[in-house]
Image 1: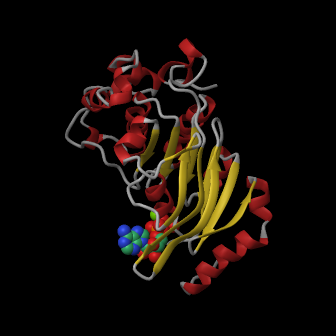
Image 2 (image 1 turned 90 degrees about the vertical axis):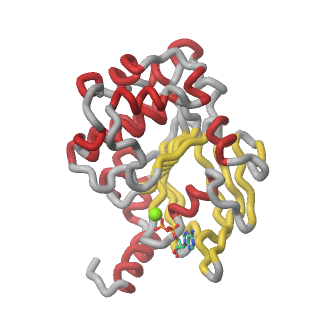
Length: 262
Ligand SMILES: Nc1ncnc2c1ncn2[C@@H]1O[C@H](COP(=O)(O)OP(=O)(O)O)[C@@H](O)[C@H]1O
Ligand SMILES: [Mg+2]
C-alpha cells in the first residue's frame, strides 16, 4: 500500500494524475558522440503504472538514453513522443512542465539547506504550484517529518535520495526516469527507496529505472530492457531476463572484456 500516492500525486481528488497518465515512447533513437555510438536505433515505451528496468553493462548507453529522452541531448536520429506528441521541439524545461522528470546519478540537492527548505524549493516548481501541498504534508508523505530542521548534508545518503524523490513528487511527475537510485545506499535505504518508487508506480506514473543493483531492481520492475553497446538487445519480464542467454552474454562479455570474473 503506497504511503503518498493518493495525496501527493493528486489521485484522491481527481482519480488521475494532474493531466492524466502519459506514455513516453521512442523509436529508432540514436545518438553519437564523435565516433562513439551511445544509442543505436532504440525503440521502447514506458507505460503508466509500470516500472521499466533499464539495464546493461557500463557504457551501454543507459544514461545517454535518459539524457536524450529528457532533452538534455538531442538525438542524432529517431523520435521521442509523450502521449503521441513529438518532443523534437520541446525544451527540457517544457518537458518537465509536461510531467517528464528525472533524477541524476548521485545527489544534486542542497547540502547546507535543511530538509524543510529543500521541500519548500520543490513546492515552488511550476507544476507544484497548482498542487494542494505544504512542506508538512509532503514531509509526512515521505516519512521526513522528524527531519525538517536537519541540514541535508548530515543525513544518510539513502535519506537524501528519498528527499530528492519527495522534491520531484511535489511536481507530480507523469513519467519519472531514475538514474542509479540505489548507488551508494545501504540495504535498509534501498528497501525504503524501493517502496517510494513503487508508490509512484501505484499512483499511475510511468517509471524507468537504470540500476546496477539488479536483485533489488527486479523486485520492483514489471518489464526489463537490456542495452548493450547502444542497442536494445532484450525486452521481457524480470523472470525472462534472469534466464535469457542474450542477457547473460552481455554481462559476461563485458566482464570478460574487463578481465574480471563473472
Ligand atoms: N557527453 C558525452 N560526450 C562524449 N561521450 C559520451 C557522452 N555521454 C556518453 N558518452 C559515451 O557514450 C557511451 C555510453 O555512455 P553512457 O550512456 O554514460 O553509458 P551507461 O550509462 O550505460 O554506463 C560511452 O562510450 C560514453 O563514453
Ligand atoms: Mg550511466
